[in-house]
Amino acid sequence: GRGGGGTGEGTIGLRHASARGGPSAGYGAGKGEARREEARGRYDRSIQARTLTAGTVDDNADPKGYEEALAKLADARAGLGIADKLWTIPGPGPRHAAGPRALDVALVIDTTGSMGDELEYLKVEIRDIAEAIAHHFPNVDQRYALVVYRDDGDQYVTRTFDFTGDLDAFQADLADQSANGGGDYPEAMDKAMEATAKLSWRGGETARVTFLVADAPPHANDFDDTLDAVDDLRAKGVAVYPVASSGVAGEAEFMMRAAAMLTGAQYLFLTDDSGVGNPHAEPHIPCYTVEQLAPLMVRAVRSELSGKRVEAEQQFSIRTVGQGQGGVCEAPRKSAKLAR
Image 1 (cartoon, rainbow, N blue to C red):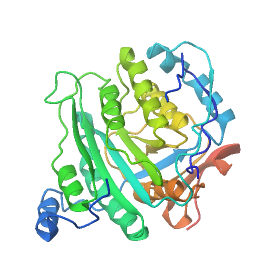
Image 2 (cartoon, rainbow, N blue to C red):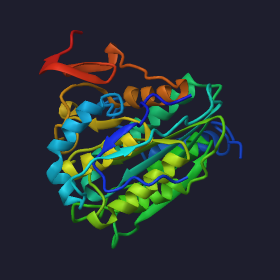
Image 3 (cartoon, one colour):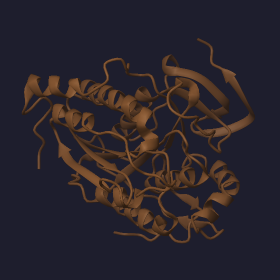
Image 4 (tube, one colour):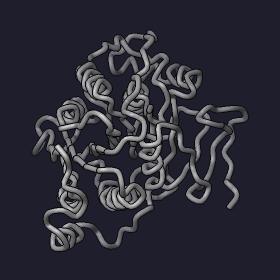
């Protein structure tokens, strides 16, 4: 089966695209209710789940739209030192056996200072998402891992919490994180993706997903290393779903969309509809639907588990921009409120 993000076949604006070639404990294992209460104590109780809003674009399903976006992102590609050239890339191939019996999800988060407001909401959103996945897929053996990162010279560059089937332990590790450091715009995304590729991913009948939550690109001289790490994940059959946060400019949008394209996933981006965080840049795409982030991320996992694209449910939709079907944009390109 192939995940719901598309084939990954097409073109991306890169200098190169090189080809590289234990059972979990189950939810609730280990610390029990005491650990669960400890984790809840480090969440801001005033923050409600399903607050953040986001849209998504499937560049694998709409290669023509992606090429149009590349033209608009020419300055961003130049800023990353990327030659003005399109290279053909092969599809990622089948990522797992049909009807996977296991799920590995890695959450990779930029925890520099600019992510402060959104990080606190993401803690609550991710907790809600993990619990929803556990509820909807009780027969799928699920594990979660966490990678947080900042930049060289900060308190840490990366911190890694490898896969666990103990949802309470995962939530507690996530609750411990805070935003600080950074300074300049780029961050150590390359180191984070390298750490993600080294996690103890399971093979065989396992759906493998990474959510990369960030608001900045890697440093220009680290772009190749970032791409190589994404290529390593691609070789392992991991789908990388970026979640672009506030402050994302062209360089970050390009890098994150390239990661999704290479791994057959989709590009997710937070929007201003939630009122949380700094202003969110409009992506270089002509059509998308804004919905709650939590159902959107759960839908991405459902797509990976089912091997086919799962469409948005209107009950979670907030507004639509342009017109499209099956991930492909159509004219006209005008924003409109969805009927409730």
